[in-house]
Amino acid sequence: MTYSVAVSGASGYAGGEILRILAAHPDVEIRTVTAHSNAGQPLIQHQPHLRSLAHLTLEQTTPEILAGHDIVFLALPHGQSGQYTDVLGDTPLVIDAGADHRLESVADWDRFYGGDFHDPWVYGVPELPLAGSKQRDRLVGATRIAAPGCNASTVSLSLAPGVAAGVIDPSDIVTVLAVGPSGAGKSLKTNLLASEVLGTANPYAVGGTHRHIPEIRQALAAARPSTGSGTASTDAADQGIRISFTPVLVPMSRGILATSTAPITPGATDDEIRAAWEAAYGDETFVQLLPAGEFPRTADVLGANTALMGLAVDRAANRVVVVTAVDNLVKGTAGAAVQSMNIALGLAEGTALTVNGVAP
Image (cartoon, rainbow, N blue to C red; front, side, top):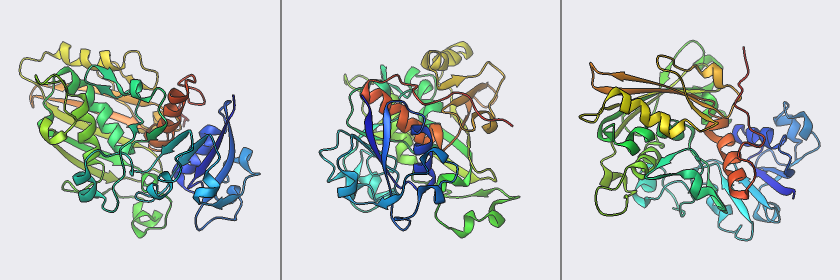
C-alpha cells in the first residue's frame, strides 16, 4: 500500500527535512506541500536541495487542502497546529512537529507557551524508556503523534535510563546544550544572522525559561518507577523532577551536543550505572551508547537519525555525566517523526532512515 502525504510548513527547515526523508520512503507518495507566505511558489525555490520534488508547488495551508490524505505532517510554529488538528478528524494519521500536542499539563502550557491548550498526543520518541516499557509500545497503531522538541528528546534520552533504573536522582539535574540555529526555524531574526552567530557562543532562555523544560520533566517522570501506589505518576512535580537547563547557540547550522549530569543514587555502583544505559539502548538501532571513555561529536550524526551517547561516572562530584549528540533536524525532529510514523503504520521502523552521518 502507498500512503498519500501532505506536509505543511514545507518551506521551513523542519518541513524540508521531513520531505527529504520521505522522498526516499518506498511506501509514501508526497502529494501536497503547503505554506503560508510562500504559497503559490515552487517548492524548489525554498528547498533547492530537494531536486526529486521539483515538480511540487506550495499550496496555501488550509484544512480543505490538508484533508483527504492518508498522512498529514504539520511543521508549523508553536501554537499554530491546533487550528488544523481540530478539523482533521477524518485523517487516518496526523503527526505534529510543533509543541501543540506534547504537554499533558495545562499549567505548564500556560506558563511556557500560552494560548489555547490542546489534548496531548502519543509522544514520538520510540526509544524513550518508560517505567517497565518503551515509548515505542504506545506508538503502535497510533493515529495522532506529537513529534518531540529536539532539545527535550536529547536530554530525555540521555537521562531516562538512569531514572528508570533508579541509579540517578532526578531532583538535581543540570544540563547545558550547544545547539545550532536551525533549531529556531527559518524565520528572519536578528540574533540568528550569520554576523551575529559566527565566531561566538550565545546563551539564551537562561534561568528555567526554555519551553522544552516541562517536556523533559514529563518524559522523565514517565520513566520513574512506581513508588508504591501501583502506577507510576506522570506528574513531574509529584515525581520530584527538577532540572537546570541552559542552551547555548553555537556557530554550526545543525546539531545538539547535550552534557547532562545528575547525582548518583546512594549505593549505586559504577557497573550498575553503566548497565542501566546498556540495558536501555543495547538493542536499539538509532540510539547508541559508545564504549567507556568515548564521547560523541555532532559531526558524527550530521544527516543521520542517530543519537550517539557517552557516559562517565564522576565519583569526585558524585554525579553521572551523559554527553549526547544528535542532528536536531533529523533525530531531533523529522527523523523521529518518520520513525514514529513507520511504527504506527506497522512498517519496518528504519524505513527511509539512516544511522550513517555525512563527513567531513
